[in-house]
Structures are given as structure tokens and as C-alpha cells.
Image (cartoon, rainbow over all chains, first blue to last red):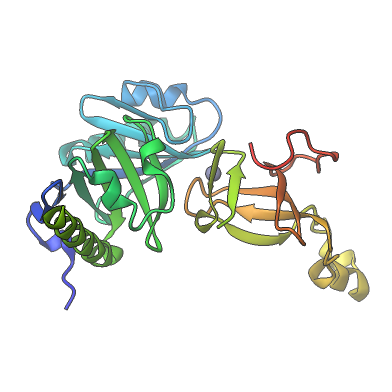
Length: 186
Length: 100
Ligand SMILES: [Zn+2]
């Protein structure tokens, strides 16, 4: 039986001696598509949107990551969503763009510990260790499109669409069990 | 696994993040209704099926989401270069050969 992860309480979901997987607190999530002059959006946000794909910027707990040539995701406190929607709507007539509330679409898993990169390598073909800390990437994890935020060398967040989350979590649980078994043998 | 350079992300990445999207540089006729059946057939279906260096579209679907073009050798599967959508097909030989 699969249960939707969004119906579960935030907290630890899987552990092994050197890595822990937990469900993050709910966050506001906004998908922004914009082209041309980006300064009006910077004025609304209070900081400049990141310029390179994979780069992040953050101010007052509002995090932005650039995912494509004209695409960003804003990760915000829940309470900030409505204010941002209204502020962006106000500049829409002069600066057409798309801003969609996708808060209900995804959950985030936090993967932390010395073996965090090893655990991710079971589902991600990319070299996750090569991603600089403080950046992020949209990539594929075992057939599922995910956004990987790398906060430190041993700390990642994984944004996953609700319907794929149970599958990804099951794989991470298996990975944790394998890493734990390896640690016992060592 | 192939490694493909995305010209938008400026990274060389595993093939699983990409999908192939057919021959490149095929312009849709501005006025489809002005086309004869033969011209329309040629636009829709007739491809070169190159044995050798082929200009083709790829999409970084599990990444930045963008379509771009690549020159790939269809016999060796070697990617000679990739370039942004809208740019002309690069002259060969491509400097640096394979991937950046
Ligand atoms: Zn890309």
C-alpha cells in the first residue's frame, strides 16, 4: 500500500549509521517563468534572480533557484505565498510573466550525513558530489524528475512530485538498509 | 551511457536526462495551405536517415527543459558538438572534437 507522503508528519523516515532521510516541513512553492529584463522581479523579491542554471539566491527565507533559461522555482514560507502572488500580479501588466502556486504539488526530503552522496548515487546518474554546495539541479532520480538542492557536501534536499514520492522514498529506504549492512560488515 | 553537453546548462551530463527529438533544421512552412501534397509529405515525413554526421534535436527534458541541436555520428554515436536552438549548423571539423 502506498500512502501519500504529504499526509505524513515531517520527521525521520529512514536511517542508516551515516545518513538520514527525513520529510521536510511544508513550504510554499511558486513556479516563475519570465523573460527579458528581470530587474522588476528583483524589486518585488528584494533580491536578484540567479543568472545561471542551477544557481540559487536567498533572502528573508525566500529561496530562488534557476531551473531553465526562463524558469525559476521560489521556495518560501507558507505565509509568504499570498503576498508574493499579489506583488507579482501588480507588475504583470508591465512585465508579463507566469507565476503558479505549486505548493501542493511536491514534498521535500532532506538527506543528511556523511554518506548522503552515496545514498543519492543509487538513483541519480549525475555526479552529485560535483555539484557545488549552495547550488541545485533539476535532474532525474530513478526515473523521476526531481529538484536536488545541495546545501552542503553532506546535506541535500530533494523536491519530488507527490505521486512519485512513495517510490523514491522506498528506494532510499532500501539504500539506507544497504549502507547499514555494509557498515555492519566493515 | 552517452554523455551529452547541454549548451544551456553548460554541463556534460548523463544521457538519461535527455530525449532525442528527430532531425534538426526542418523549418515548418509559413503557409501550410500553400503546400502541395508532395511538399507537405516531404516536410512531415521525409528525412535523410544519415549514415554519418547527423544534425539532430535533443531536449534536456529532466534538466533545463530546453531543446537544442547536436551533431552526432550515427555509426559511432559520437557527439561532435551541441549548440543552441536557432543557431546555424556549425562547420566541421568542430574544434575540440567530442565533448567539452
Ligand atoms: Zn540543460
